[in-house]
Image 1 (cartoon, rainbow, N blue to C red):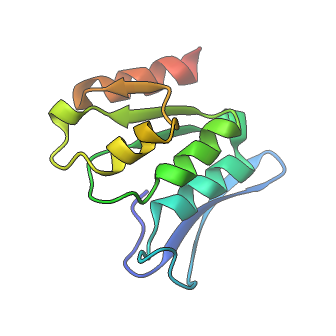
Image 2: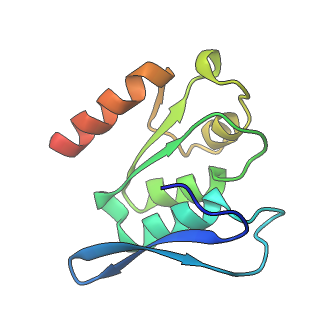
Length: 118
């Protein structure tokens, strides 16, 4: 899911059904949309049923949210430095202990499939 400009994308749940909500809201850090907002909603509504992946990007947006996902029992993955264009977001998540696996870009999709089928 790609968040539309200047709006947040959140995972929600009603019973056994998950859905995506797009909404307005105040800035989180200096960001809107924010990966932290999306990941926090994943931690809250999906927990152990979620897989969080953080990839190339500047800054630390997503690092705290990914940690919250990991603490909620989600599997977490970060793109490795060698295949990142900018090793900022992944680096911050790794520093915070939010990442289970650090993988090169071509290996991420396979890892997601293994997690989801196992």
